[in-house]
Length: 246
Image 1 (cartoon, rainbow, N blue to C red):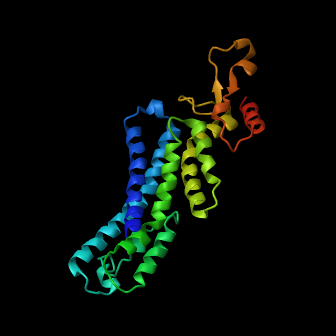
Image 2 (image 1 turned 45 degrees about the horizontal axis):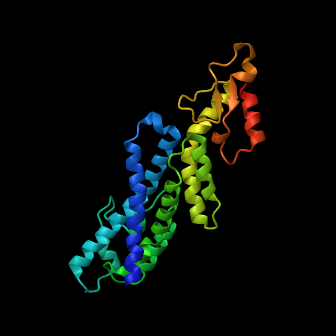
């Protein structure tokens, strides 16, 4: 019982770490954050939405437990809610997400449902929370390494988490990276296609030196910021991108 309680409490502790990071960003001016950090914050909030849905299911189960006590009841009757068709809504329907990020939670819900009784116990709660704990732990690791990085440096740090043996963890990191990299790809596309550098917050790995020698614009105006080159870009590739935009 003690081990189960500690395992469940760990989820709350991890959530506080992620939540505190998001709150600290809200208190930071936009100019100091940059659009990449904002995209990271948005991606984390999107992942937390699944967690909130699961909490809603667990709260409903807790209410059922308080009503029925220890009297066995059919599982479906305890989870019946009114939808458009008046049918039953399963926990897996409530926590479903388009990114398939909670499939293992659905499996845990199905396993609990197959036991044939309603109500919430510590063992069932631990089964339901196993996958969310793993996801929250990974998000906490990403948050811990994110401060005070920004721009391409933040992308490189987050990319390091994709080297993981767990497919679910890799999928989580890949989803977050898709959102985080979007602002950089927008700047990259503008630079490669039109030769325009639209990076007012200095997050891209190419910088413009406005005070450069106008007689040698090719060499002095644009240059690479090595600390902002994403980890999945090699130095030769970054140099080619610089030349294409020029």
